Length: 245
Ligand code: GLP
Image (cartoon, rainbow, N blue to C red; front, side):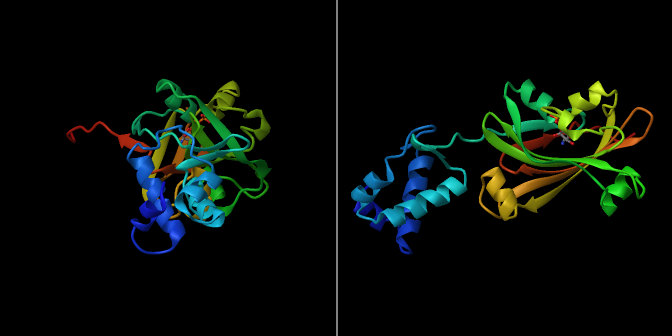
């Protein structure tokens, strides 16, 4: 990192030029995955920029998920996301999908409550006034990489205590003999808004897959209505196609 290099990064505000320089260093492997960034003070000295300018460029890249700040130990290049192939015809859970690929999944809870159903939950889940839903919103993470935001609504009588879901929702439903056996899924394209971007650690407006799943019990009763936003750079949905009969 030198002042000349920053100057060579075109025109525009200095923090944007430095950001571009850092992006190039990451893309070109000069700064490898997991590698520590020099301290902000060192970068400021080397580039003859102010600490404020350096901080702004680094902050942007942290927000975009390209750098990770670890309190007390510094700033590091984030691991790159490897794309996950997901079958379109198998009814599996996130936990199972990740385990099959050797990835460890975990969730950060955003919401876990019992609530009165909203009009769309009433319609999809076939509920009436006075019924309840268990609402579970989670950021789903695989090997430290945020993959999706999932908002599941389950009919309250099948899952009266949402806190009983600690890891896998489908495991919790299985324990209550209410694991779905069939589902319909609708996938559409979408750009992430500001909240989704900061949770998924991508830039606002990045491409995402919006997925709605409605799943059923063996007796045909609807049990789950889940709306998810999957990172567009992390998922390939794959289907097997047959000639129509
Ligand atoms: C997938 C589906 C969701 C489902 C979830 C259950 O991600 N898109 O509709 O609720 O799996 O996953 P888990 O059992 O790991 O909580």
